[in-house]
Length: 297
Image 1 (cartoon, one colour):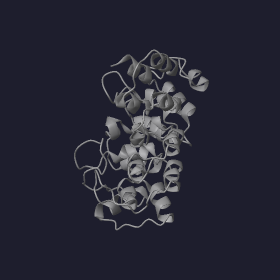
Image 2 (cartoon, rainbow, N blue to C red):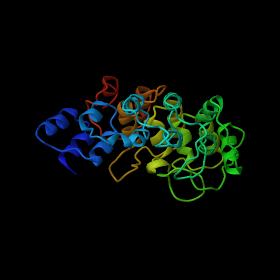
Image 3 (cartoon, helix red, strand yellow):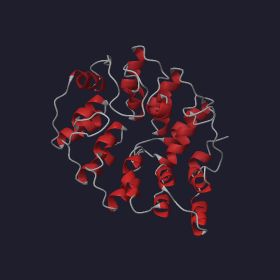
Image 4 (cartoon, rainbow, N blue to C red):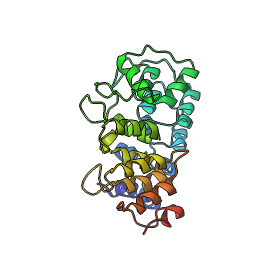
């Protein structure tokens, strides 16, 4: 790892600027990882012409200010199929609305991953009920197949039977058991649906996007009620998604409070609950948020 990339990974903007002033050269990999930071100043510091095409990397995270940075640079949201990407990653209504207001075509067929799928059908297949309702209000249309309809019924609380089908988005586990969507519902704060699926026998630590567990995804988005349910159901508090060291669910909550901040997420409450439950973390104070620091040992 380059020293510039290491500074980005550490969230050390001053060090990034120091290295750039001394002649360090940014590249696509460094900017790609800068999209993981919640402060758009990283993007300003590391930008080079053409890097704005990485808008979908920013849409991997719940970061309205970061998305605004790309929109202000004139990115064509239709050329990059940003609406599809945001739906697949479970982005909230605020970000989806920003994309729609920027001209995203609600009926544009996708050209990748699940080629030909329209946004409304993708929202159904991803169990993203809020996105589905927003798109319908904006005039989106699509014929739903049996898989779409089955997942939408689960999202509406009308069923607990998931279909056998491969995921429509990349970065999720292989297979057709559709277990990845438990984490999607957890990230969206759909505690009712998560409970229903667990009651129906789904494993509490079923892997989802980027190998995260549902507890990781709920914690990253500050979904206090969902985190409480998953902890009560025995979710692994020490699981690490990427390797043997990180990130734990508490790491996800702390990181999310600064870099992936869901509008209605309760990050202090989530951190307090996980700390009280004995969840470990590799983070140390200061974290950048005094409210979070006060909760850590």
